[in-house]
Every structure is written in structure tokens, then in C-alpha cells.
Amino acid sequence: MPKKYFVIFAGPNGSGKSTLVKSFMEKNPSMLFVNADYIAMEEFAHISDLKERSWAAMMKTEESLEILLKNGKDVGFETVLSSDYKWRFIELARKLRYTVISIFVTTNSADKNWERVQKRVKENGHSVEEDKVRSRYDKSLDRLPRLLSQSNISLVYDNSIDEQKPLLFKYSIYSSNNVDLPQRLTPVTTLMTSTSRN
Image (cartoon, rainbow, N blue to C red; front, side, top):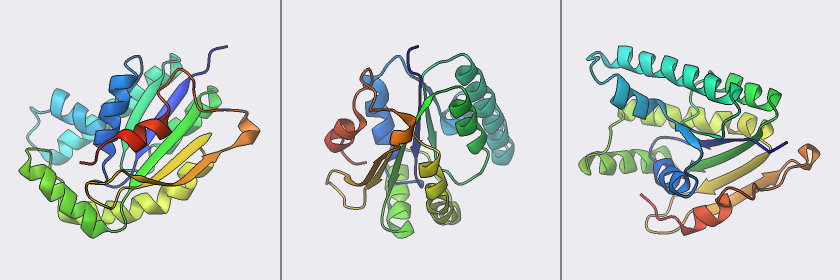
């Protein structure tokens, strides 16, 4: 039976996930990608209330993930990992015998992430309120151990230093699951060490 992959790109706002995701998806066009921010902008931009728009996007994200996983599709999913609804999709993927790969990108401080978000906004990227950037930074790191424990393959990168490649400081394969880095996907380690920073 061909292996199925659920790839989770996680980390606080401003860590550099989007640069990684863009490169990864370009090299793996058969993988379907789900991101609540993109869904909010593309499908719910007509909703003026930001909380209502965010809620609609989250509901659509959950619906899309469940459909894709149950249909056996390779799925990429980007998240700041600051809320708990994601766990049920990891549990579903494991139940459906997916290989779960988590790629966590962070920096060494919430100050650095806020600085990056401000820079992104100046370059016409999407904004996130400062208090959310800081609270999500802590929540994301608090949830990291659980993410690692539920993943078959885990990579954690420190993306703190501007204009340098991210530093891999944790790489784990849970051998009890008898999995290897997927051969039909661009190796994540190669991609991360060749991708520029935001």
C-alpha cells in the first residue's frame, strides 16, 4: 500500500514558515495545502468582521482537512499551533495510517517574531496584532512537545539569525513506526538548508 503523508508546518507567527511552505509546495505539486489565513483571504474576504471571518475560515479549514485525509490525499498544513483543534486531525491521520511529518520553525524570542511580522507588513504581507504574536509564541512552544510525540518524523529549526540559513537543532524518527523520510517528497532537510529566510 502506498504511503500517505500529512506534513505539518508549525511555529509562531513571523518564524519563517511561509517561505518554507512555498518552496516545499513548489517542489511537491501533488500535495494539497491547507492554510486558514489563505482561506480567509480567498473565500471570506467579503466578511468585514475579522473575528467572524476568522471563525468561518477555521470551520472551512477543519472541513477541508477532514475530507482530504479521509480521501487519502497527501496533505500539507500550516499552523501557528496556538490552539487545540489541530490535534484531532493528527489523531485522524494516524488512525488512517498516514506518516505524520512535523516541521517546526521558531526563533529565540517573541521580540524577533514581532520584528519579522512588522517587516512583512511593510512589504505588503498580512498583519498580526502584537499581543497575538507574543501570546502565540508562548502557546506554540508549549505545544511543541505534544506535536513531536505524535509525529513519525520531526524536524525543529531555529530561524533566529537574519540572512542565514535555519539551523536544524532537533531531528527525530520514531523507529517503532518503521518509517523513513519519504522518497517521493523533496527531502525536508535538503529543502530547509537551501531555503532563504523571510
